[in-house]
Image (cartoon, rainbow, N blue to C red; front, side):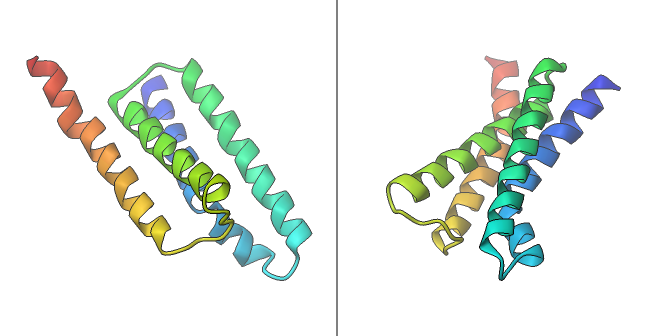
Length: 117
């Protein structure tokens, strides 16, 4: 049971983080203050979920999900600090594809490689 909860929380954290901008735009398109407050709240929820996930048993799914989350966070930091971009741009689609590829590698291929070697 704890493993399933860990997997669900890990997936929820990535989904909330990846869709945070769209959620904020949906609710507060015209009010930047409330938009920012909601974004900060979602980020806090994601961090809380990750802390809880780190305390629970590790599974293949939660490990792969956390790696994908790390790729998304790294890409977000690069967008903000290097390119000074705070909005969703077309290069973010490439970041999403890369994070999905990391997820698949860690979940399927990486796990099988560890079993054989």
